[in-house]
Length: 540
Image (cartoon, rainbow, N blue to C red; front, side, top):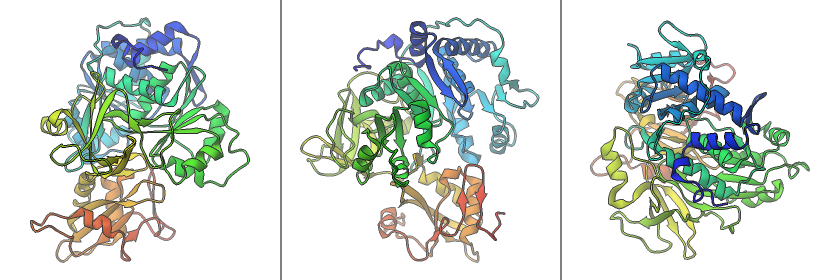
């Protein structure tokens, strides 16, 4: 269905879609989470109440609100309430800590924070002298001076707010991996965020009888556009705090799930489990696979009785390339050009390259507000990325004679691990804080799950020694768990240019060596909740 063209600008906002659907079918199920089920009408009324209570606390149109919360029904109420007020949500990766968290807080210009109790200590660690917020709302035990999250549910008017908001206004800021600098906060307009969900509907052919499985965290744009797609299609959503591969198919059958996003190595993980006669006995119709692994694509479609769709996109550029549910399959391709965008492959001078030649992928929309609105607090980065009337993705690709595009490599130094974009710059910054490290280099290494692993190489200060296990534990204390390197090398020096710049491409091309330390082979496990040493070892 033509969702994007049928949605007027006034309705191109997440809360406007909710209000329309709640008016049309107030008793219809919007989503379920754990043992809770939310109807459209009931959820919308509660979101209105939360919005008015937020407003009474000083959150208003244009207020930047930092959100550090796990997936929950309360987070859903909060997100839509902020949208109704015209406030700007700044969802933060819940694994961030230290300098990385401090950078996000400072750059986002947030004056209010709303968080789960367990993140209070993490925030205090980043700001020993106290976080710079005028208002802090906490779900759980509340310290003096903070407001209980429960106050947002106090009795209040539950009718729609009807604030005079515009579709081009900023509704959120999502931080995405930096490469040669800190992470960048992408500003998202109401129209752009909503259009993301509408395009997802079109690519996957979603309709009223679809059940979307959403296990992504809400600090990623994917969790948000899956929710918007659910509202736009009139279907239902099964919300999950995180993905369990072992329980995945039971969850699919229990809730009648028809569509999910196979981000990162999810598809490889699913197909790696032993085949079962029950594999095709599911409700799944479409898997939106990013990436779409060519080595298992046909096996997945045959084994699970579904169709796979794919795209090339990002937080900044939207979904400019795709292969939809009704399109032919081209192995290894990320799709053809969307009718809503222009896409080219260009050289270093922004001149188009011939068919089959690799270059940088650049994008521009054919309609207003179908890409990000720049990087907050980084005007130079914004100008550089949006130069010559094209948004420069930093990714390399090529196109064939039939118009199929292929992703070749990242032109940047970012690392993609299990659905997370990781800044090599920020990894290096954290590693270099170890007193024995003279210089650190972070690069991508191949992963058996279809994406990449983090590899760190270090040189040492004169007179120092360093065991890989020591550096691993340092990294876990300094960075988000998913950034912690799997592979570690202690080297005498790096390959360099005549001007002493490290030649990372040579390190990547050489690959792992016999002296490379592999934390998994050594028995160390890095989890969301802690660093688990092998038997007989101890984490300091």
